[in-house]
Every structure is written in structure tokens, then in C-alpha cells.
Image: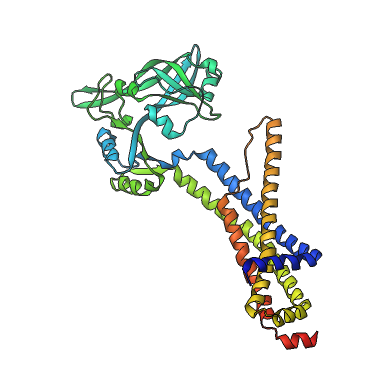
Length: 418
């Protein structure tokens, strides 16, 4: 018997027992839709949290610092060493310190970062107004919205181009005889607001790295070796961001930098923890869905077993007219597969549709209440393919027992008893 004809007969048999078939398929569809809905919620929340933490580009970026070691330095030499590692695309160093930003008579404390133009891209910073630095010599600043608000400026495009003053404490070395003393000299840097970063908590100012280098800033005050206005051939930095060509190369590049003694961190570490948490969530909700699937599978087994008892004479006649035990076996497996596939497709459709409906409702209410519309449901096609594959396996396992019993029915006994 051809496989296509087996499925045709299976569909015809199921149509003859419509109520029983609908209840069995409905039970399977409920289990599948429950799993799809819950797992889609898990994937959606995971994707939402990951997008809030970082972007895909940041997963291939490593943050390198000297850590607790006083012997290692992040300087031009070490930056070149990082660049020579296979797979590294960009190395962007930075210098960090404390300072104050002033406009007219309003002043607030800020964290100051001297960075390159590539640094903000590697950091994944999103500007709500303005743009990146014109060049590394420009006296321009990219400021967080909180810092601007504290000095009386709005976080809007009208603020771009406004004049502010950045005050930093520049360390200078004063040598008197054999005693070397480090003094902090307050230095005012007139700046223009070039860009604005939306941040409700942090007061941060980013300015071109070269501005601080020209002032003579070393890596930290305790390592001050450069006088104001002087530069060295080997500048020192606090942190270096390393951009890797491909995310798959991150572990090998990280190992090589750690072998040099540096401390390496990555957004991928945080993302990995997030993925572990949601994996546990998905396993738990998948377990609840699996219980529903198990109950549905028992219903399918019961339907096929009852069908077998009702169709003993029919099976005997089929064998009397030339059907083999393999044909009967194939017919019952086809019925199990038909119920499983129909229930699976309907269940996935209901689960995805319910997710999209809830998603649309949440977006609507979030927009009405002035919030940000986000998606909390996401159904990867790989999950749908895996779900359908599992349904096929469950259907085959469910149909195995009644199919084997039907295939072993004796023709004479079946016709005599009926």
C-alpha cells in the first residue's frame, strides 16, 4: 500500500468518527499551544532583556583593564600587542577620571572619559541628539541627559552646540631636592555639547582622548609620570576596548589577552548569565507543557485502541482482500501521524496567534500610557521545527502499540468472531 493512500484512508476513517477525532486532536492542540505560548514568552523576555543590556555588535567586544596588578600598564605598546592578535579588528583605549561640568552659575560632578571616536560605537552608545566628535582635536563633549539637566540644559536637539566648561584636576609632579610631590592643578576646558545620551541615572561626560593626552594625563594619579603639557612616546590608559572580527573568535582572543596578565570582561558574560536564567525558565514551563502533551498522547492512544476494537471485522476483510500485515501496521501509524500533525499545526497556530494577540495588547496599552512599546513574545522557526519533529515522534510512539496489535490480527478469527 502506498504511503499517500494510507494517509487518505486515515483521514477518511477519522472523518467517520468526527467527535472522537476532534476531541483527541483538540486535546493534543491544547498541549502544543500551551508549550508554544509559554516558550515563546520565555524567548521574547530573553530577547527583550538582552536588547536592553547590549546589542549584537557588543557581543564581539572585550573590555581590557590592568586589574589589581601594579606591574602591568595599558599603554601604546600593549595596545599594539592587542592589535597583533589574530581576529582583532579595533583596539580603542580610554582614560577615566572625575571632574565637574559648569554652565553659568550651575555646576555638577561628573565622571569624565577620554575616548576615541570608535569607542562610543564599541560601547553601543545611542545618541538621542547630536553626533559623534568632529575629530580628536575638537573641544567637544558628549554628555548624558542627567548631567545636562543638573546644569539647566534640556536633553533636546536645541542643546547641541551650547557652551559648557569642564573642570578636571590635572596631576603635576613637583620635585624639591630628593622629594617628589604630586600636586593636583584644576584646569578648565571650554567645550561645546556635541551629542546627548539618554541616561536617567549617570552624570557622565565623554570627550576626545587626545584632549586629555595633550594635558598629560597618565593612567591614574598614583602612576603620574607626565607633567602638564608634556607627552610621552608611550601613553598610558585605564581601559582598552578590543573589537573582534567574529563573535566565535572572542574566547580565543580573550585567552591570549589574559595570558598577558590583563583582566578581561565582556558583555557576553552578562548575556551568558541571562541565557542560563531563561534556559531554566524555559525548561520549567516546557515541563508543564510536556505534562499536557503526555495527557494528550494518552488520549490518542485510547482513541486508536478503541478504534482497533471496533474495526476488527474491517481489518479481517482488508486482509482477506489482499492487505498485508505491513499495510495494516502502516494504516494505523498513518492515523496516529494524521492526528498528531493536525493537532500540532493547530496547536502551534493557536500558541503563536495568542502570543501575537497578547503582544499587540501590551503594545497598545504601553503606548496609551506613555511607555515604550516592546515585544515580549518571540517564536523562532527552529523551535517550531523542533516542536513538529517531537510531535511526529510522539505520534509514532503512540500509534506503535495499536498498530502492532492490528497487524497481528488473524483473518479467520476476526471474521468468525464478528
